[in-house]
Length: 274
Length: 274
Image (cartoon, rainbow over all chains, first blue to last red; front, side):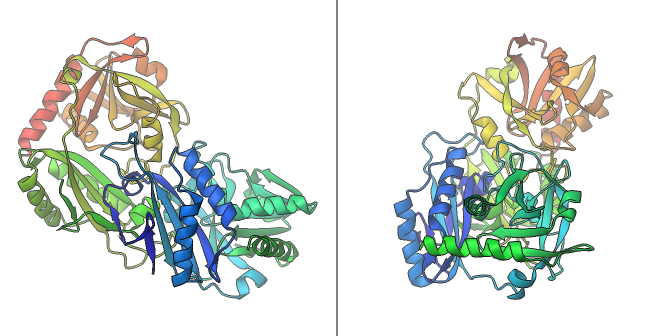
């Protein structure tokens, strides 16, 4: 499928790219549906913020919009991955003073998740690997993702939709590729990501929407015990939307009303951003 | 300069490489001098061990030797970077069951460090970023190196040869691109890397050589206070060899006898490995 490297079709990234050498870059994954990149403005804002956090020059939004139009013409329904690296650089960790960032836009097939998962919920597990605490990189969707790779390697069971990640202190942070919400006594809570984890666009959108609808929303530390005691648990990201959690080990949930509400909010946001 | 991708000259790495996508790979940096890759057997063993730690198939040593011969013919004196990634993969963190690893061998110019540094010592500083503790990745020279990039971005002063990295607990771990030794009451000590840091080939070689020569060598936790109280401090890696530290802030050192000894050991090892 189509790959654009700095706006030009191609498939080869220079071997001296710092994204390859050091994971020195950031990325976004989002669906394109009917030729529209879903919640694009939020994704661009996050991409630009993540670049800024690493002192990488973000591509202009207009350049990316041009890329997206080309992708849409070829693949109106696909997954977009947008990677921005610090570009080519000589040997050594020091960022070259004049480095020109590189932007890679790649389309791939939409995933085919079971249709029952958003409605009837998913089974999840705890991963054994713990996320390291690194406040300087926390929240950023950067290219240093070996922890996620190792975590996702922990299970093969197709019935397990996601693995939950905790930090060194045993506090629940996120899913391998999703953010987490819990419902606790009518409050919508999501883990604090100031030490590790990726602060996703969908998480931010839901926090904003919830507050706008008068829900009590908060960012808090969530222990394993608190997670298991929650009235509902939900996983969110740009591709899956919202999946209610139906099972974690022996603990089962079956009230998915909050998940429906979050799904509706996302549908509203996507419709409004068209 | 020459780049070999899976043994073939080229400069483009497929955009779907997992090294680029997630930093899903490992690497080595070593000098080639007079057409000989210095301490090659040790580097290959470490490359293979690091691959194994991430369940990546290591390239056969014979394949790499063939690559090195091609590089040597073109650039008998250069820096070699050998990168092994998990290869191409679809979207998603899960390693593809059948992934074929990719090997990138790239030559670059030897660095030109001041000739005085190995003899008269270098000035170093403490970096403010702290290394996150991640035992699952500690010791491995993997491609997730944003901490090093951020650390190396902390100073521009050409008089500062290296920055020292401490972990979340404030214990000294290594330099941005080097391992650390201290001399303390006749004992040669290097920081414990079980929580973070890269366990380099030169560090291992020196530990072995020191023990072989009857030196008291040990791996220990080294606090900032202990570092400053040390009788000597040394930085080591495959490219720099051994640099004695002459200054860290207000603390100065001027007895470089231990550094000379370590330099002699490395020269012996390099001669023996030819």
